[in-house]
Length: 121
Image 1: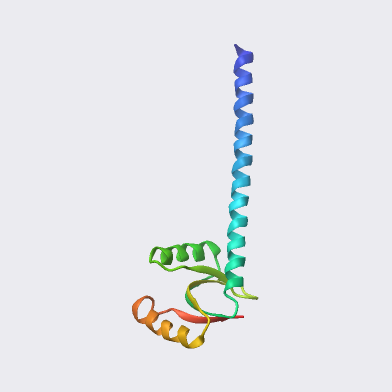
Image 2: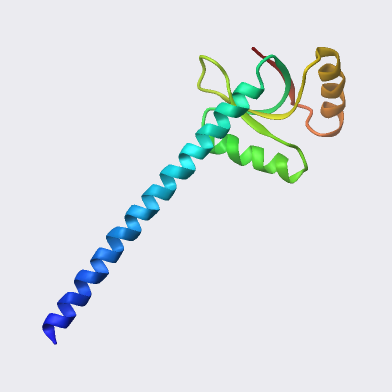
């Protein structure tokens, strides 16, 4: 009976170790997906005029703010400012400055008065 109990404990410990490894691998996978999405968003934002609704040093805050704007229907992106610790939450992007300025004025009037335009290169 004692031997069966010890075997049961060993199996439980082994299962726990496997679960911990699987959890760590899943977290690493999700982190790499998030990093890839940020790199893609930064690449897509190059030579674009971006309406910024938030800038954060803490990546989790930037992601949370992006989620809030996604709930409002915007296709938000988080991009990193070059040579900076800041991550910017982009609500909308445009190829032309004139369209971006026009939309920024509307955006400030109706959505977020503190939004601003960032030109990524």
